[in-house]
Image (cartoon, rainbow, N blue to C red; front, side, top):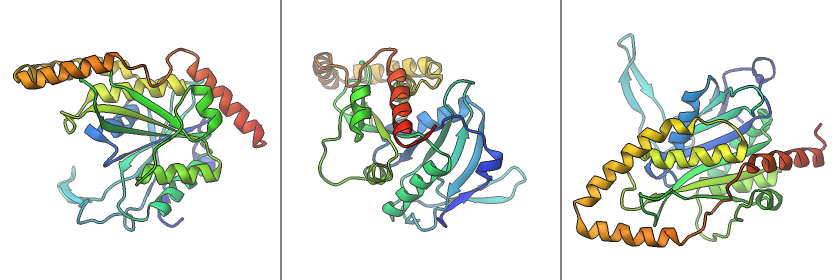
Length: 291
C-alpha cells in the first residue's frame, strides 16, 4: 500500500517476540486523551524503535487537523503533519512484544486506512490486535473507572469473559477496523474506559491507569501502570476540591456513586485472564496451521 511507509526492513532488522498490535486514535473515542496517553506511556516505559508511518496526505482534511510549525534544535523551522507512527516496543524477556500506533483518527478513506492497519498487523506477524478507547460515561470520579472489553471473535470473548458488540448504528474508524480485521481472520479485542462526563476534556491519568491495568491483565504484558498511582490520586483530589465548591454537583456525584456501587464489574478480574488469552492464541494459531 503506497500510504504505508516502512523505515526498516522488517525481515532483517526487526526481531519481535509474538507481537501484539495495540492502537488508539485521538478523536471522538479518546475522551480526555486517555487511550492515546496509555500507549504513549508504554512507549516511554520501554525501549522503542520506529518502524514506519502511515502517510497522512490522503486521509486528513487539513483544515480540520492542521499541521503545526515549530523551531527545531538548530533553530530551523519544522513542519509537523498529523502523525500515525508505527513503533515497536521491546518488552522484558518472556513477554510478548508490542507494536503501537498512538495516532490521530483520520477524516477520510477509513476503509483504506483500516486496510493499511491490517497490512501492518500482517507484516509484523501480530497474533492479535487490541484497540484502546475512552468514552464519556455516567460514572463518578471517586470510583474505579470502568473498562469495558469486547470482541467479535466468539471464542476470544467467551474465554476472557468479554462482551460481544451489540451496538447498531453509525460507527467510527474503530468499527471499520474491527470489520476489516475480522474479514482478514486477525483476532481483535477492544478495551474502552469510561470517563466522567462532567470533566470530559481534562487529562485523566486515572482513566489511563485503568486502561493500562486491564491491558496488562489481559495480555500479561507489563505496562508499569502503578507508576501513575500518584498522578491518578492527585487528579482525584483536584476534582474533589472543584466539586466541593458546588453543592449541586456534589449531590449529583453522590447519586452517581450510589448507581456505580450497584453495578458489577464489566470485565472479569483474576490472574487467569492472561493464561486464557495465551491459550486462545495457541489454539487460533494451531487451527490456522502455524507452528
